[in-house]
Image (cartoon, rainbow over all chains, first blue to last red; front, side, top):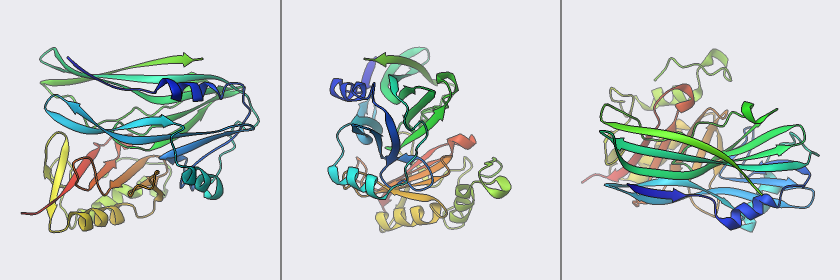
Length: 186
Length: 121
């Protein structure tokens, strides 16, 4: 079975871990007006500005190629970061609270035909942050876009991470199953 | 494409659904509620003399009433956000070189569709 992986690099994970212990100030992103979704988001703390963005990668599967969103950390252009800080709406939920933990949500989508595995797509689709009084998460809007959305909740279970939608839908012969795994990075 | 409820908007209809209905007057939807003809993989295809002009027209009509955001890294392309419920994104040059558009109404329980705009022979 062909396995395609699209996961956060070690360097990206290290940058996320650097946020632990930081006091959150606000979240913003490129072009944000009323709604907190963007192709590039910034987590701004008292001491750090960490950019989390998404790009499109073209992946090779048996019989077809498809574009997928990939989360990146620390790869944004300085001009985009400056524009976001200068022009975009800022969201101050949980401002002043310490970031305590960072978790990654990994999705594994498996295609089977007549019960036989054809391919598997493993991707990191969301990053969860625990702060003193709650949680927030940055997640890919869907598997094929480069847009990230932000959700807030009082606890991890209540975080409404959008199902990472895809163009793949099961029918009588082809089945697509998705499993999700959350793991802490430190 | 109607029938789903979005409490963020008066009357409960997400503007993207209205915009799709408007665009469907020019580009009829098929029985599955999709624009164009089936293409390779899971995409639809719309052929025209000038694919980029057609793609931009789709985005202009479909994005009415949305927050419109840019793409990073100096890339062309835009996405339209309707209250974090429905979305449209346009890439003038997708991986196969053609403009592509993604219409996402999954949060209203409707099918997501990707359209490639190709040159008519």
